[in-house]
Length: 132
Image (cartoon, rainbow, N blue to C red; front, side):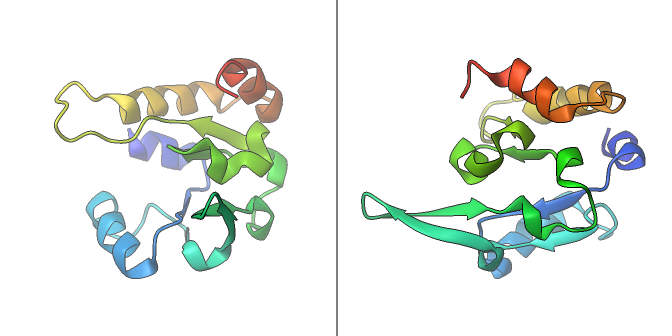
């Protein structure tokens, strides 16, 4: 599935995790280090404090290799892409205890179907408007 997605998309990872922790997780997904063309970590997020809790917001404008209108961000916390909700696809967090967890498979199917859509922002907004 990831190879089909890789053929059609410029894939990067933008995480609110610290680099040392994120790299460990990334290596489990990208064993040969050839899937994620860019890796962005917590130090590239904006930190805001809400009710004494630090929230890390991802600013897609720093990804200058791709037109921002063509960027899709997938995150289990919509607040992380809140500034760019037309770019954001919400996903439920991975649950290794749930053997029926097929969220990544469903995401792969969605991304493969989205590849030829001209206005990604409009599609995401219409598809996930009840989520926001």
